[in-house]
Figure 1 (cartoon, helix red, strand yellow):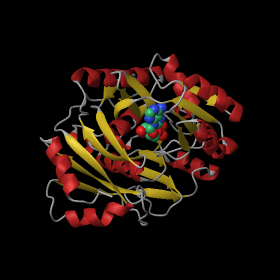
Figure 2 (cartoon, rainbow, N blue to C red):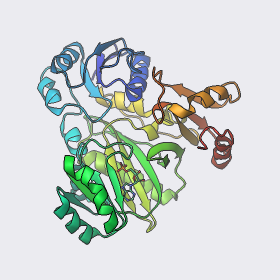
Figure 3 (cartoon, helix red, strand yellow):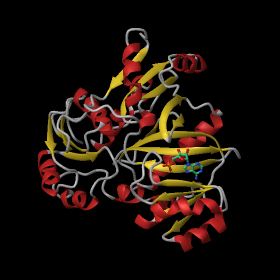
Length: 371
Ligand code: AMP
């Protein structure tokens, strides 16, 4: 067990690292962050920051030397560097989880082998593979880069042969995956935490609405039947055990029009759709992550009140700041990023509510998110 007073080292200093660090400070831990941007969001609240690139081996070694437990806030961690320091510092999450989730083929293969339903998929390396895969899966389908894509980047949705030409960009640079289209009712996600002793705890199901491929709103609990909610949570727990999870994992899912749940993606870290848990649950996703990597016992998660979480992107910041004086019930989170850019995640707002529909209307009525 890692004790208060010992140091959690975090690779990556964005908002996820910041909220991890805020929770860790609350329990008396020390926090050291590695990030190339001076005074990055996590650096602002940590005890100290090493300002260096994520792949800087000397910097990762310094982080390992000065930490008692090492974790990360994103998946693009240098696996070899992490492996190299694993004998110097406790790395509870290991490298297998990252290795699996970094690559969409490996991730979907793992899920399929663990008995979970995903979209049908084929590995695609070139135009000939693509033709064959399209013939097998049919239209519509979606071509994605195997690695490095996020928020819809590195993806092409294909409706007919005419769209094949759009794929040359993706195919010229990287290995790809073709997925059959899942006609879905809605998208949802479940956060699940597990520690070294195999104790598991699972969060309520969040319903996720995206704009421009970026998460816009999460509604908790998701507006699906209690049976489906239970099934989604059970699937997340099944995945946590199958992958021998340590820490927190985000499981993104589609609720298909056929009433089945399909796993879309795994995030081996806290997830944007779990931010609501800071106010709406007895323990947040960040608290569960920290407890799990420090091998503390894990509590059962209770939803204290339904919640709506809205992301604040660069274009929403001014409007949201204006609302501070008018919205006593909004929980504002500002990540403290120096540069405001269009579509950059700058913060979020969580609203606890007994009337989700009314709250969604109120959010709409502000006009901030209407473009
Ligand atoms: P991803 O990066 O895999 O999360 O994909 C981004 C978004 O594209 C998802 O949130 C879905 O809205 C949509 N999408 C991706 N893959 C599929 C699929 N196989 N079937 C239906 N929609 C998909």
